[in-house]
Image 1 (cartoon, rainbow, N blue to C red):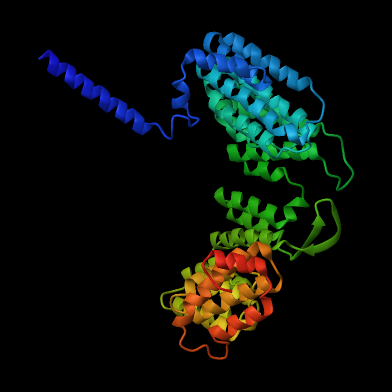
Image 2 (image 1 turned 120 degrees about the horizontal axis):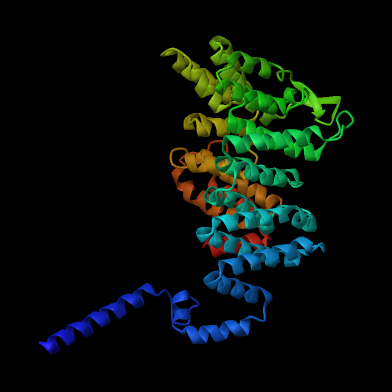
Length: 501
């Protein structure tokens, strides 16, 4: 009986070893946690001591030791390091920025770790960490990149730690205000929303008071002069107004001139509509309706057409406002006019949705006719492919092949994919245009894509019974070989794919 039990134990041990071997990825020499653990604690400790001559490794090890035995000591170590960074003024060379970001991230991780057991201590450390952003960005002249990403993560971490820290909302609001008022690089705007749940009504009110007071204390500027600090504060006040549902407060952060810009008017109109103030929304949007606007927020001496993207955003909200005010017919007229001018699919769909049954079928046919006759070939093709109307797209390509722009890779590639099954000739014409454009202008970076397109053209050729007015496959390929036979880069890419030039 004892022998049977021993045998079963051996089998279990072997099965466990086999399972462990399966879970271990790679050979025993692969650098992994499992393989390093096999070295044993003493050997690993010895290796780490040897590596501790590196400042980062030494700092990381010290922080780990403090994290294990003394939260107070860990907080003190983090405080000392943050103070040292705060005192530094020398420029951070671009070669050292990755290492600097790594050091920042190490201390942020330790703050997050401390917050799990002592959030009341961790939150002030996090705020001190965020206080570093301005001076650090001054030393690199930009908030983008790995360093900026660490501060963005720290900013968002605030929302995880603050609720558990249970700091008085008014005191918390003062710290948030301090960060925003020192934000010369426009990175702490989102902190308003992140902190809002912890601030509560009293904290939000206090934050608003602090920001309004700071804005009122800004020195007067000459007309049109830009005030970066005031812009930061106004941005925070807008976010605060959105959280509080204060539409009037949101609008008040924009000057009369700014409210005439389509994008700004659209933001105002959208909020007024959400608040059930349809008439006020339409009035706010009408202010930005003219096709001309001041050249910039800094000058009103010259004028230029509105940005098409801003105008489209404004138009979206304006149509909603017309609808909300019971002006359905006017909204429909504007939708159709916008479609005729741009072939906008969203505008057409909204227009058709507002028509009675059966009228939408006639209108859709009219829309397709307008698309096939649209002056810009690329816009027409994009519409017909996306709608979709593939027969019309095929006819468009064949009838207006001279307008195909072979450099428009994204559109032509997508269209060729959609058409190659049922309309191989149209797909071939698009692929030929891209190949010819690449070879004619010697665009080496596109040789591989052109080689793939070459093979696609070859695969489509047997599917085309009649090339009509266009050169057949052999003639087209012979022409390419005669004209571009010396392009060895393209030849190499084609032969690598198994093709023959």
